Length: 297
Image (cartoon, rainbow, N blue to C red):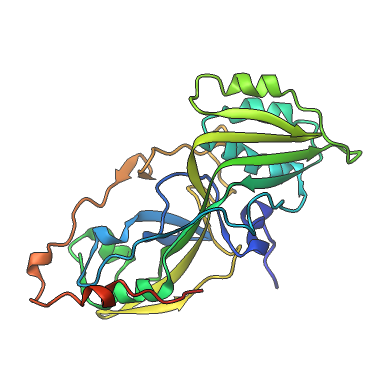
């Protein structure tokens, strides 16, 4: 029996990406996470727990990804689209409750991300980085989530954007009239946040900085002291977020602290890096070899 698709988590699937349910700055290539249901929970940044003799892969910035910029998602039912809209406007600092009130008569919504930037590392570069090094096995979270036979995820690519548009239609399939000044008032006090009508039923929201909203990640495991690649999960099968969509916070929204991962009331911070001085003496690869990049998926 096939699983029912949750469009809140699959609306970027046809473009080849998984969704970051609540866009936030901390998710980047080499972010490390474990899976809980279909939800990825961020553990930290791989170089914080892995001391490699190979150079850390440097993300390759790809300005303005043509296949994504301005491309619309499918028309989503209002209950699905409003959940997505709430998370997007909250990420740039706008009160989602007031925004949802302006869209109460929406029948469908579709989204367009503008000026998209892709940041990635190749699979070959990640493999080279994992080839020689030492894991911080004294770290309790490493032992639990990155230990032998545990499956975990390493982000290889993210899509980022400062702005997105939303096109809302009413039950007659006409563009929904939204009171932009009311939404602008909800954004007042947030520096660099703008709300602008672009066309009938279409409003564009913009924030002051690029935020990741989509990603690709490789699933790996460790067998003894060896890294093993399991797969690149199919787009739309996992997502990054602190809730799985079935158990929201009391007011329906998730709140996070910038750069922190919350476990209950506690913050987890991988501040203990492996001591490279404990490694067996070995020469780093030649500079040309360590920076050589292959082509990944």
